[in-house]
Length: 78
Figure 1 (cartoon, rainbow, N blue to C red):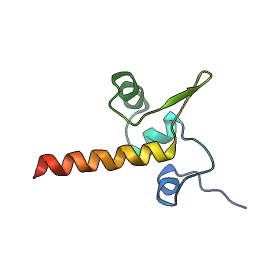
Figure 2: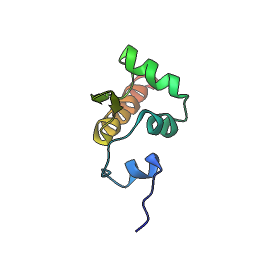
Figure 3: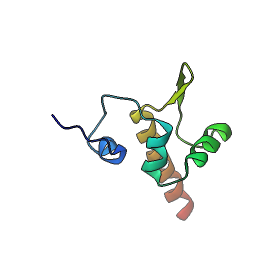
Figure 4: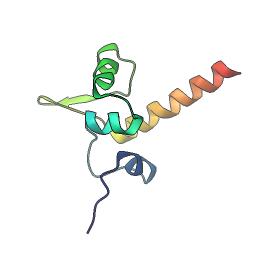
């Protein structure tokens, strides 16, 4: 059974069977990994959490954050 490791496809197809990594987030938004860490530091990006020393993102939280970003952008454009 093949698995799709593209985080964008993972989010489109529903909740994955794994949490996303900072690398996944950087690939998803096509931004440098350092940007993901800056978002975390400034609390401006999708909410993440730590499991031990590892930073992870719940795909449902990332999807909710994307939805909120789109809503905020549309309200500013109006």
